[in-house]
Length: 399
Image 1 (cartoon, rainbow, N blue to C red):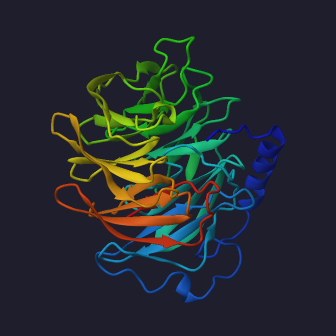
Image 2 (tube, one colour):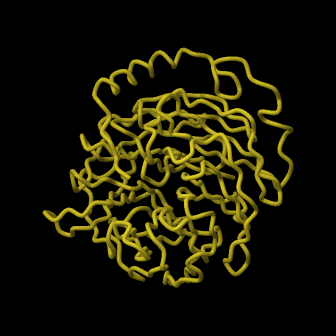
């Protein structure tokens, strides 16, 4: 899975398109035309219900696929996709976090890497209302949010780095002028940008090995000032394992990083770390293998006891125990299996933490699981349709 640079002409077109689209009034479902039948959204959500959102990342028109989540965790796909008004790239974003919900689940943010912008939606149950399309730098690929900030990861080889925005109470974004920060390597091929739980540090994983730098495999750390700006230069932290792809934090500044080991068969692993206020990290458990291939995505359960990882090459989800001290131990390398060709990518939890959802790039579907008290997973079915099959679907968010 390779990241492609976006031609300068397309970036210019995106900037012009952003200004033009800002003048278009939106219907409640995010499109510029009339809304379709009520079956698009269904009846209002009841207590215990929620929604799941997936992204097509299609080159001709990026769209959000909407699912209604029942109280028992099962999904129903609604019958019309919602356009972002931007463009995807048609191949994997190869990152974690291209689609993010705000912590109160009121706003949804989506990257459009093919048109260099971010779409902002207001969320009302399963309904999405278009709010904004805003320029976000060269090839935006991953997002991270706090209450009043959003940072985007720019993944183009023309300039990989991070840039910030101020988030208003209505969900809209205002650029932080001069906030772009380069990563420690010009060929980082970054995998994710992520705020620490207190919002004072940003970490960025680097998927490439740079033999000209020390350490060769790195996780960049930026401190965040009171003004919302990241430090001018990152700390280049050593990754314990090869090709750190993505990460997830627990509330106590302990985190899990997954390491794909360049998709070598059966060598997928995860490491845990403790983050310090100066953006340095220290290893707790190093490269705990799960016997799977090409581990790339990770979430931590709401109670902080388990980490779940998606293994792209094996079609599986692994479950790790995550102790109070931050040590990792494998529970089951294949706790969930969605098919050898399913290509599991993004993971997301329901707001109450009872259910886990997994975007299946290979089959154009979303798999649902119930999380049992011991961390095991019970399948709740797979819902297909609306997503491209083996053609770059990226991004999953749920509540």
